[in-house]
Image (cartoon, rainbow, N blue to C red; front, side, top):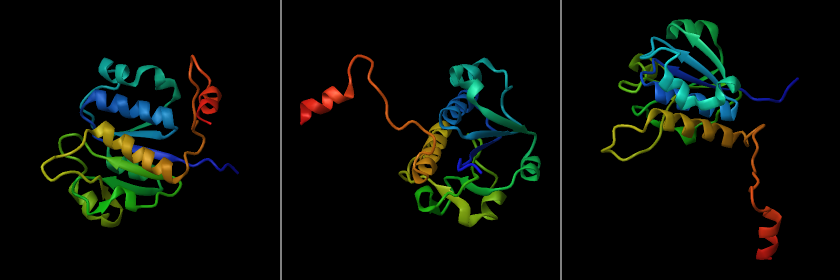
Amino acid sequence: MSDKKTLNIVMVEPEIPQNTGNVARTCACTGARLHLVGPMGFKIDDKKLKRAGLDYWELLDISYYDSLDEFFEKNKGHFFFFSTKAQHRYTDVEYPDNSYLFFGRETKGLPEDLLFNNPGTTVRMPMIDEARSLNLSNSVAIGVYEVLRQWDFPELLCSGELRAYKWTEANSKQG
């Protein structure tokens, strides 16, 4: 049995291809699965979508659904709904394996009946009162990395190397 944890990102009716492309890249780089729920405000072959995702599409595990009803029929797990209308902070929640982080469309967010029926798992990112919302792709990245932080970044490379220098040499200069 594998110890690999599964993180799922659900974008409900995304409208801006660049945001979805950026989210796709975040998912590809972190191993998260991406679920796109329609109707969407663009076609999947949109050049802006592909450009934002760059050359990471082959690393992506992606599924498409025509509606939220279809999504819920086909998926089971722990559902968390990100919204500016929530009463709980996203950092106050523990995200178990097979968590699904839901994000709504750029102009309206998630359907309010979905939020109302899930008050304990509807979460927000704190921000100043005068601001309407964060950019959707930034919000997804923040949510993804909070879950991965709680899971201690499983299967992710947590250190890097310089091209022109060696870290061991820098460390020896400090000591």
